[in-house]
Length: 397
Ligand code: APR
Ligand code: PHB
Image 1 (cartoon, rainbow, N blue to C red):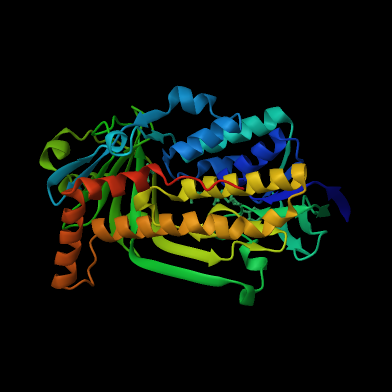
Image 2: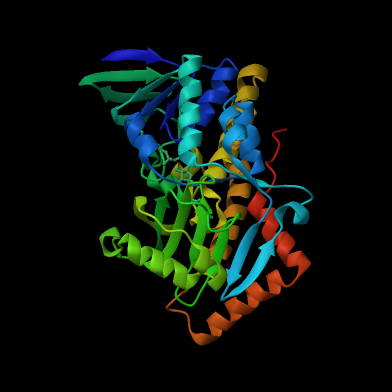
């Protein structure tokens, strides 16, 4: 077995692992990233597209914000279409000047990969059987295989940035973790198309036929979603069926101007809320999707990954520079306070905007009335806006 050594071993080269790696590397802390897939596979996944200001600033801090600043679209608000009635949520005005950045997760990942390559830091792709060990000791290590060779990676800390299906969370004894979960009875069918956006801002539509979302990646590339029942497959959805259904859920003036075209990607994602507590086990820290999942309705998944990264980075910096080992045990509690607020908002947006077939008439009216109460009041719109642009990151003492 070959032995390698680093300061922070990072499992997973998604946005969490790459962003943490870049911040640590720039601070002079050595990292090695272990990724199961190939770079092309990682870049082939179409995921989120809305960045909170906190994440935008973190990407700049990591030195990976140039292309985002040049090509990303700053959005001052979004549109709600509620059973035909349109409500504008003016993020900028309601939050005292905050906005969001439209820039795809694929591009964030591409930029972070490039920055890591320029920095000369190592990511090992195509590794197999990654297993963290001795997390409760001061000398943890990770074993893995690559090209038929076995390796042992000695380190100070392990960051589990390996997503919901990763090995990090699963390597923690089950009786040391508490899981909180809700699975929704529907998914989102998404398509990507090289067509101009139907509206200059994102449109979240509540409709008796189900939820729809009009999003975008640029002024020439769109991302649209439809709520579909669990169990439905992409084969059941031709492009034509998708566009017809989307039009039926949008206000007439948008449906009329919607430009359709061939899809370049089509996929269905289930909707789930999930949190594991605590987000750490000894010297293993869970970051991003490895620790929590939100339904996409609040655009919070990627942004929560970024706030976890920020917290872990700030703590590790103080550990290495100021010997503040006492901060290590605070990681989970600091992250979870923000995570749960985003879980609540994502659950709420999902509950308000989707069609629930198992809801009786009373529940339906209460949901409609709750949403009407929020959008008809300045205080309610402010609440939606301040959550959507992102709650503040908690500073590390
Ligand atoms: N060994 C090595 N790598 C692994 C393993 C493993 N056992 N299991 C998973 N991985 C890799 C995956 O291939 C993936 O590239 O870990 C990476 C995890 O990346 P993501 O799933 O993208 O998770 P994360 O980086 O936390 O990103 C946050 O926010 O918008 C949401 O779900 C969206 O992906 C997004 C997430
Ligand atoms: C996306 O563009 O993929 C997107 C945007 C907003 C959301 C979810 C997904 O709430």
